[in-house]
Structure formats: structure tokens, C-alpha cells
Length: 109
Image (cartoon, rainbow, N blue to C red; front, side, top):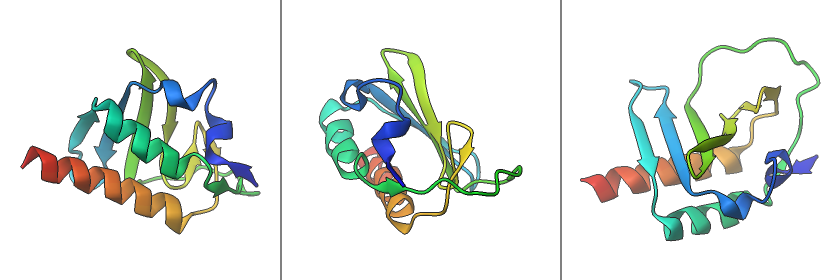
């Protein structure tokens, strides 16, 4: 079991934007608001993640999030895969993904 931030190659507090791709329809959103990013990362960074022993291929996704530092892709994850490593589903991570996706949807409305 590892904290979510251990999958990030560097200091997760340096994230400057988050791109969200919805698996339901393919809608893409980008979050650039530093205060929103900082608050959300504080919630997810310490969530414990368990690598899945069975690393067979997986298809389909609820969301794919990509974290960027000044335009450079640093980490890509879905509820079941983090940077290509299959992980056990986490209700807490799914909930936080929903929260940011719908927060951004409500702000755009």
C-alpha cells in the first residue's frame, strides 16, 4: 500500500493543470485554477493505493486524469490504473475524481 503521491515523479504540489477525460461521452475539461488544484491535491495525495496483483490488461474507464507541470505531462491515472500500474479500486479516489469533475462542470455552467 502506497500513498497516491508516491506515484508522482517529483513534487505533486508543482502541478499546474489537470486535464479530465470522461469515459462517458469523451468530454474533456482542463483545470488551471491553482487554488482548486491545490485543494484537490491535498485531498488525494495521502489516499492509500494498493497495486493489483493481477496486472493483466484492462479496458474502459470512468475518467482519465492527467496532471501537468507547465505543459509537461507528469502523471496519468484512472480509478484502476496509475501510470500504467493496475491498482485496486478505491471508493475514495473515485469520489474525489467525481468531485473535481462535477465542480468544474458547475463552474463552467
